[in-house]
Image (tube, rainbow, N blue to C red; front, side):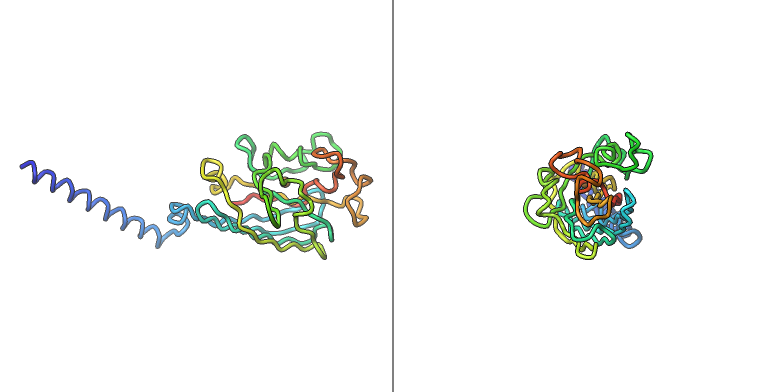
Length: 217
Ligand SMILES: [Cu+2]
């Protein structure tokens, strides 16, 4: 009697797990995003929109596989032949969106990085062309894309630590920001355009003001 019960139990387990697999296969056929996120693989896109009247636009595609993301950025209309710091921003307390004119806290008719922080949070990843990708490289201007003709084509694999932050990014809460606005249109980042950066007074604000922003979802 005891044995029969045990056998029935195992049988039930096998049936349940078979049903589970069938269920996964069924959902796979119907909705690939559901089953791919279950494996930790997701495809995200961001439509980059102009900030600070930069006139730029662009798109981001990010293919997450487990803890790695292959990030593609294609942008145009950026200030020409100048380095553009670019990051994945995220803040657990942020609104996880892009700033707009109402975030211009000091009414100087430009949005600086700090004014956008309540929207997109601090830097999570620096999307550099080589080397370190941590927030420490946030202003590593010699390792960000420069933009001949204002065009940027970028592709790099970025590694993430496992955990809640990565899950939040995969669920659509990361924000891509590309910085660098030539406010006075003189072909260089200078202090005449908008003074010193609020992030680093040795850099012109033109080098750090956001030019493009898009939520990665
Ligand atoms: Cu940034």
